[in-house]
Image (cartoon, rainbow, N blue to C red; front, side, top):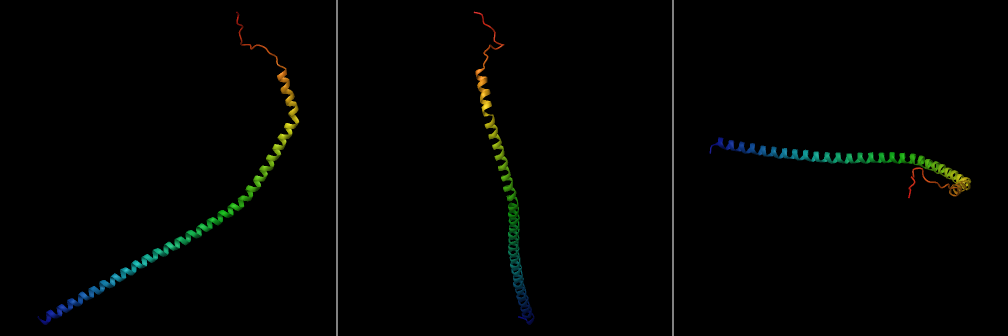
Length: 127
């Protein structure tokens, strides 16, 4: 072998070795990029979950505040309705008690005072 061939083979071997090292380095960079991307996704999911929980807590608090404000209106309205209903029932009872004798008397008079007569549309049948 010639000294030129030996130096060429050594240079080729050196070039191949450099390429293999560069490929390994590139694989490491790609792996780090993948790990970075995965970590960023995990962080984003975690942050989104925290924001969702904070939003839920805020809306729950708003609902409880709304509910507490309106429950007092409901209680007030219900007591007002109960009072009105009670007074109306008392007025009806009073009217029944005061007019009961007169109504019974009119019903009895109508039943006793019957004036039986034939209906005007009834035709006499001759036998």
